[in-house]
Image (cartoon, rainbow, N blue to C red):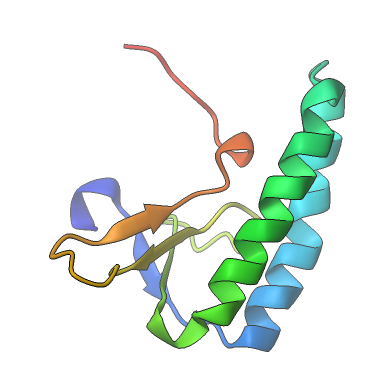
Length: 101
């Protein structure tokens, strides 16, 4: 994860639940602030499903945060699916800033 300047962090179920409880409402508030309030219900549904999935496999997950170790921001979740050599990455996409090049 060096090229993305991400740093691995450790989360227990309790740690991850606390992070999600603080972070996900901020994303909803941001969606409303930028005029995308119609996206909030879909985000809440998907985020709830995502958190449940991550929590169910917490011991198989790796967590990464940005270079500044800002635990108030988004985290990257990584795991290996069965029968696949390459890792799968999970992001809460509505919490990310997109840039076009």
